[in-house]
Figure 1 (cartoon, helix red, strand yellow):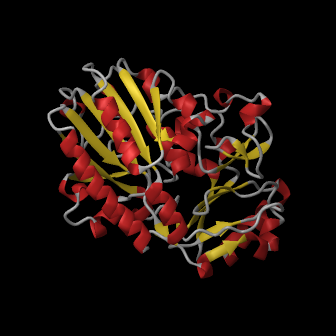
Figure 2 (cartoon, helix red, strand yellow):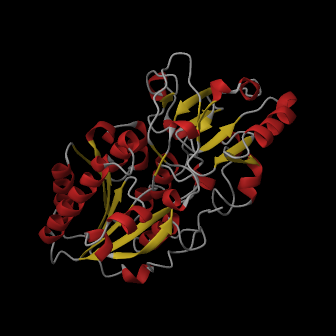
Amino acid sequence: MLKPNYEDGSIVNLMSSVGKNFGYKSKYKPLKLLHPSELKNSKNILLIILDGVGFEYIKKKGNNTIFQKNLKGKITSVFPPTTAAAIPSITTGVAPQQHAFTGWYMHLKEIGIVSAILPYSPRAGGKPFSKHKLPIEKIFTEQGFASRLNSTSYTIMKRDILNSDFTIHISKKSKRLGYETLNGFLMQVRKTIFSHNRRKYIFAYWPKFDELSHKYGVKSKKSYNHFKQLDKKLKQFIKTIKDTNTTVIIIADHGFIDTTKNKTINLENHPKLQECLTLPLCGEPRTVYCYVHPSKTRQFENYVKTKLNKACYLFKSKELIDKNYFGLFKSNPQLLERIGDYVLIMKDNYMMRDTLLNKKPHPLIGNHGGISKEEMYVPLVVIKT
């Protein structure tokens, strides 16, 4: 089973390497593949996150691309390798062990509801919790990475999430810029580089590859065509920032696999398992957090071991914390309550889903959040201008 290399080989360690150049000292060691000294003379450090463009994808599809030509190596994401856990790690500099954002669906004991955590709203739908006077600072207590730096910083996000509670929280002390298109994205990045002559850190997030891979599959022509477009546009962009003394670091938050209907476990088809649960499924379809009634633990364990053995690994949640899947050092007090009583980590390309009463099933072809190499490994691409 793959797990993140928080010692010196994950996206968390990358943030330590970056942060050390701006006065931030992390408990996590710098990245072995990119020592802080390699960045010390750069006037601008630009971190581009291409959501979902995993290392294995570049290895298979990236021949003669800007990604392959400037590939420094592979690093791991966090656990689970998913946007809802990895982007908080990139934007705080610490692992899920500390920030305690553990998957797209999270049970928030503080307000008694299962949430869609990055939109910071109920899973069942509705307004963000902040509209009900529940500020995200009470839930996401970790300080943003930009707030730890002794330099100017910028956060570049798609306009529809630019002013979300999460984005505002993690980008305090950082200037936020929005965009609609790929050209607009790169224009905003270029604008920040030329904005002034002082040293700066730029965080720039592009989500389109992830969106296409979820809908059509990572093996789809649509995803590949967009990947080629990214290659073309980034090559052009690099030429426009020549001689600016900028180090461009390109990574992903996770990779992807494609799943199939015959390997999708719908909870509604397993009533004996469903009756063990006190809450809807949380986490991700590839790493599932199960809240189990104390009187039903034996039934739950027996069912998983006998009926779902081919599909998933079964762990008590505390066991994964003890094995450092979520990170190193002291854990956030809310971590354990946010990963349920048991964790099901799906094997091969299996996934597990449930559906709320007010929702219709909305299956996705591409998925992530599991421990396969396709999901866990992300590229480290470094370009010095």
